[in-house]
Image (cartoon, rainbow, N blue to C red; front, top):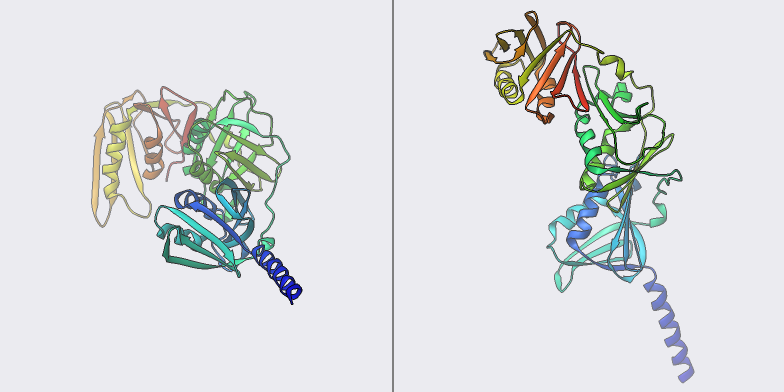
Amino acid sequence: MKVFEDESEIIYNILCLLIKELYMKFICQRDTILKEIEHANNFTSQRNPLSISSNVLIENYQNLLTIKSTDTKLGFSTSFPVVTEVPGATTVICEKFLSILKSLPSCDLIFTDEDDRINITVAGNDSIRFNLKTLAADRFPELISCSDPYFSLSQRDFFDMIHKTSFSVGTDETKFFLTGVYMEKNDEGQLVLASTDGKRLSCSRKVFEQEIPDFKPCIIPIKFLNQLMSIGSGEGLFSLAVTNAYIFAEINGHSIYSTLITGNYPAYKKVIPQSFAYECRINVKSLLDALNQVSLCVDSNSKKIFLDFSRNGVLLSSENTEIGDAKIMINCDYDGPDTTISFNYSFLQTPLKIIETESVKICFNSANTAIAVLPEPERDYIFVIMPMH
């Protein structure tokens, strides 16, 4: 009888161990995991909540939690310390998981994966409990890895280049090759970012202290660049790698990647005139203030305004047949013929908000050709606007 009881106890202990291996348990500070799930959610698929790509992978092992997400085109991965009680891995709907985390107090949370559900409780408080359905970790797709060498860049300088070019990216999906930012290394060793939607162009060139190896010019999806800036701090260095089909980044303890946009990017250098017949220097604040005022009476569909350049100043004007019109004259430094140029006011408004200098230089050859907007004195970026007719 004693032997039977001993055997039953052994079997019971084995079953307990087997059951214990079926679930995962870890303890983590809410704010820590919330921050990373917010990042991960930006890399999931939002279109189909039933797809595994809408889930986030959670791997808990040796006091380290690894989080991965992907929408098949972009990928995200990071790891950070937690208290591991039982190692394991699972996936959970990222958006819903994020909503739950946001609703919980800022304290230690206990996560337990059991019976195809992840249980979330507050440490020391049994009154709060969430149970969220999970899918097996082995259903989660493998993230793309990079075997090519990375090169380092200053976060501050690269983010500044993104800031000066991203707003000109096209939104027309039929012209998909314009929906990203073009990146290349030019013959002078500068890193170049350029973007255009066919009506305006932004270009930034910069020499980095870090050595940049040669790479094939590429078109980077704007979402990747936005997420890069969201994850980064703007301080220190980060690492970049470019292959034929992907771009990879290592930044602040996070690994992200994206497929590159295929297609032939327009010859952006040809859009930028090599010389200008006329230049007009204007105070940035004066021009931006006048532009904002005149835009109050602009036609909401065309957003068309007029700039009349003369030696007496620049006259900004707009007209809306249903509302009225506006005219504002500001001082300028101009020594050319009287010229009237019309264009979408927002195409000038955005560059003026970005330019760091007190004065701006508007350059042109005629009322019907491309206009260049440059900081005065000139720096390492330029904006080009096509006039309206």
